[in-house]
Length: 86
Image 1 (cartoon, rainbow, N blue to C red):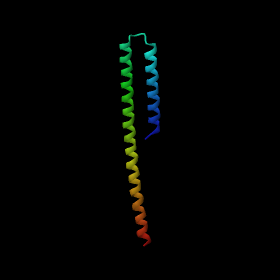
Image 2: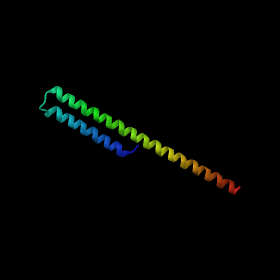
Image 3: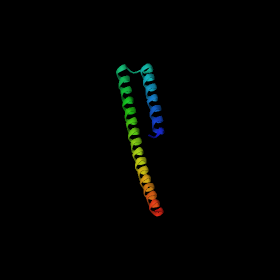
Image 4: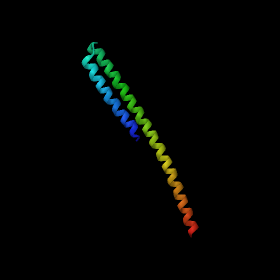
């Protein structure tokens, strides 16, 4: 998993938490509007984290496939070398 995505996700969640707390404490609007806004911010944060996770999974799959190709290539070269030695 790309640590860049993890770090960004954690900072985003921390920012959402701080923003939600500040909204809750200092909002001039009524409680219902503040709760709606916080719920919206949490939803946005959750969507961001899900997208970042999906992106990290895709990147991991790409690295896995590339590693698999490199391992297969190395195996073929080793077998070729062994045949040449025999």
